[in-house]
Image (cartoon, rainbow, N blue to C red; front, side, top):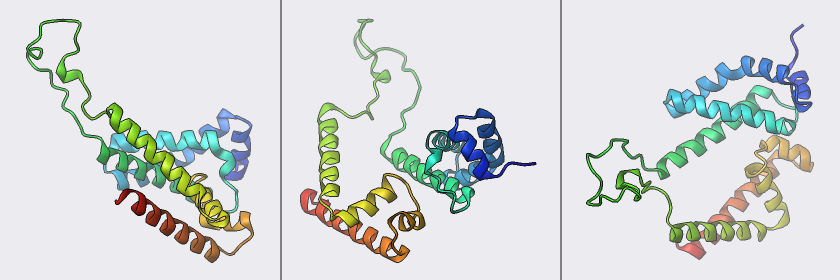
Amino acid sequence: MTPTDVELIQRILNRNTDAFAVLFDRYIGHVTDHLLRMLKDVGAADDVAQEVFLRVWNRADQWSGSGPFRAWLLRIATNLALNHLRGKKRRRELPLEMPSMYDDNEDENLVPGWMIDHASLGPDAQIEQSEQQQMLRQMISDLPKEKREVFEMVHKDELALQEVAKRLGIPEGTVKSRLFHARKRLANAWQEKTGE
């Protein structure tokens, strides 16, 4: 008899690799197709699909079992694909061609210019990014408790609105309203502080 998704997740929670293999085989095609439609790159879709199933292995306890497992899985895939696309916009692709000679310097101990990743953040940019992350964390912690709770459950814990409503014992419409107001308040606070 074929095990259900619920049974497989229970076994995965007990670190059963056979159950994980069955679940992987059952859904890898759906996940990869979904990602390919979003990313339009076979290599990227395969990489993100692996990350999706790594999340399943490490965070199987986050699926409540109340909705279809496939929907939860595709939501994770969508979130990771969007993260991938945002990251791709920030990274600048550098060619891997090797120049004919070093930059006017024959010292072999120096790194040739073509090997330096110019897209990496310098110390000033790293400090600025760290300060911005700290500022955002502070803004989130300054949200009213009920709005902060919903915001963190959706964005940090990656829970569906329906699941948030169930866990908090409130209507889904209330969850949507709190999330909307939390996001709006954060956007206003961010613009006030940064001018962006």
